[in-house]
Amino acid sequence: MLDILVTGADGQLGREMRRMAGVSPNRYHFTDVGELDITDTDAVERFFAERHFDAVVNCAAYTDVERAEAEPERAQALNAEAPGTLARAVAAQGAVLFHVSTDYVFGGDASTPYTEQAPADPRNVYGRTKLAGERAVVASGCRYVILRTSWLYSEYGRNFLKTMLRLTAEREQLNVVFDQIGTPTYAGDLAMTIFSILEGGYYAGHEGIYHFSNEGVASWYDFAVEIASAVGHDRCAIAPCRSADYPARAVRPAYSVLDKTKIKRTFGVEIPHWRESMRYCLARIAASMKNQES
Image 1 (cartoon, rainbow, N blue to C red):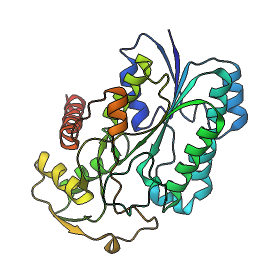
Image 2 (cartoon, one colour):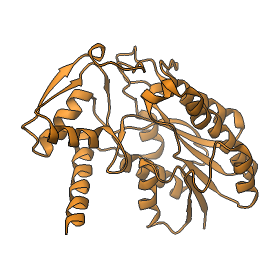
Image 3 (tube, one colour):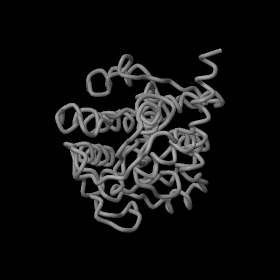
């Protein structure tokens, strides 16, 4: 039986990992900042001195891309420095670290999907700090599986899908950018992939950096239109707009589609199309709302 630590357990991905753990024969231990502040090096060292883990899944991150521009120190602490602290603790125990990174490590100048070997060129604080976190994990000498993902959403917390559900219900018109291209990714699909690789021990001998997102390509405009259509919010007219028309501190990559060939070939992962996963997530949200009303 394995002992597995999941940090950032109250976030989107962490909560999906909680769901997966319910069917595992292994022991999962879940922490968020209240139980373990991974930006506190001394706290991390004490925590690991008192416990042994076979694997750690780091779901903790500073993910507010806009606010990171105004709070670079906080983003640096959680995205760049904390992963290195965790990785060194993992290395000391001979464990393996699953660490989640982002498509925003790329600049967005490509026109074909980014492979794991493509040069990183982040254009905002969030991307730069996440790239620094990747490099800290690699430099630690621990065994690691780094998974870069994109446009993560779920039924939990704050995300684009839930924001669009609310806004398309409240407004008659909405402008959404069409010149940023990527792939919406359901956190449940990413959690299932991590869970499957971890539970099966398939990472052994295959440590490294991998890309994971749902299949397909979309703009934020495409994603918003599909969300509204799926739930019948046809009263709201959604219009495409350019990024330049939408004031933002952070520069987003114009194109950040990830090539998933490596993870599919290495682990035999089957990945749903983003529309399929979007509909599944919306159904879960609807069922949850119905349960709350009854």
